[in-house]
Length: 324
Image 1 (spheres, rainbow, N blue to C red):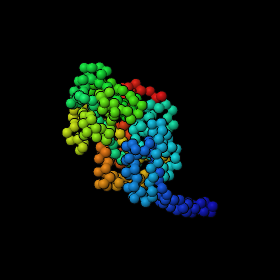
Image 2 (spheres, one colour):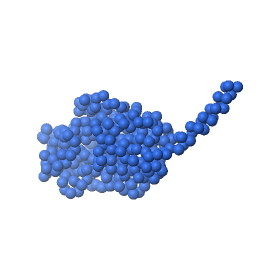
Image 3 (cartoon, helix red, strand yellow):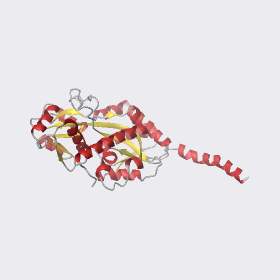
Image 4 (tube, rainbow, N blue to C red):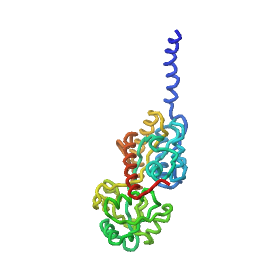
């Protein structure tokens, strides 16, 4: 008889616990941006937040938590309760790059976090500056070979996404671009315009106004197809460097253990938001490739992140980067 009572109690317990999950979300959801306000990830997150709020029925609030190249904010999310109320706007730094360059990283991106959906990716470009920039990518490669150490390319620093792209490009093309690491990206653009460096790898969103204002020349775009904003500029593949792609991405992740129903709810809201014409226009205006299809599912986003990690590890090996 005691066993019978327990058996009857189990369905009752299930009924008691089920509404708690079904009620999600019943309070505001925090999206941690692991960078200061104003950067690409922050802009994308703030563009997305009102649309997610509308679809989820609770306020979605952006919370900037900069520090340690994005690792500080990512760690906070990795250690947060897996209840669907704390999400990470993840990107190259805290997810792909930092495990390769930061010793004793206090979290494992793909063990402690679970991917939900990719939002967008902004392709990198190689943009040349100064008074006499090369006319084509082939001319830049030829110049770098003819003047070893002379074709200088600025990046925000050793181990940055731009630096890793440079190393992969040199390896794939046989170019001899000379890496010039800066402490952050703020001084790179002025030095490019002034001709203090020959070129830079940078997101299309940053390079586009320079190109249009005649302050630099975009030689190639590291995307799979030409971008609508620059139909006259070839991809790296078209310019002779086969299958070369590189991008800064943004996607949502949650603490490991977050219920599948919550992940599905966020994923569906992201897919609906990025399908909205007004949001797509704004994302594409930033030079974004807006994610769709499999990349906006947990499994598809995970596969994307694994490819990114593999490319980053290969670039780090080429450059001889070690965690510090």
